[in-house]
Image 1 (spheres, chains in turn orange, red):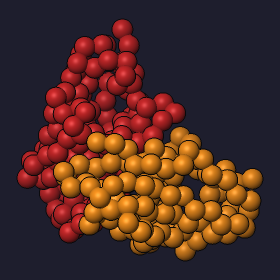
Image 2: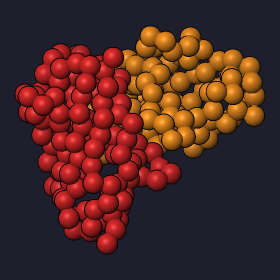
Image 3: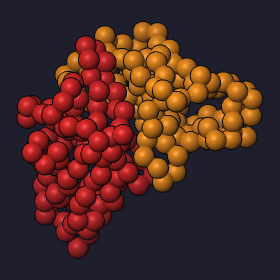
Image 4: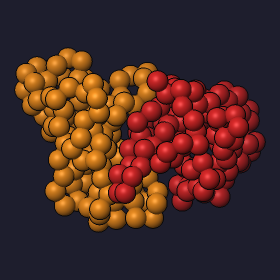
Length: 110
Length: 122
């Protein structure tokens, strides 16, 4: 199985908005399966930020939002803050009952 | 609050079997539509899903690792375990256990352990 495709890095200034894409296939992202997004700060475990394409867990800022169109899902962070600087991963269940992650995107807040 | 805690040997010799255990607290490993998972992260790299198991014992594996993996669950101890055989330096990584919530076509990892570092070296 191939990893989902994410940009290696994105950057933005405080207050700006950024979007991270996650491209898969009809066997994972584009199928009926939902996409989730995880934030990982250095030395920390990943943290769930978005599930079922667009839903935020309790306690996650509404500055984080998710969307999906076809085989591509997106994570948008609005009103960038210094604390948002981290690695972000998308994940998806697949039609073969396996799980696949994206390669990860490093967000730099300038 | 659910918590997961990995435990393992830290250092394993090449060709040996790596045993890892995840202890779950704050909830029963037998309840609900949850799948208990192992995920690893090579140094400086991304996340790689390894396997997951349901409380019934039904499991699924990453095809690239399937021949070397055994995953098991012990509901009496509220633990699940991973054994990775014939390890090489390429298996050196940070290993996480995590809970996956699933329902219909939904699947996401909502609880993670802190991770345990495994180094394969003679």
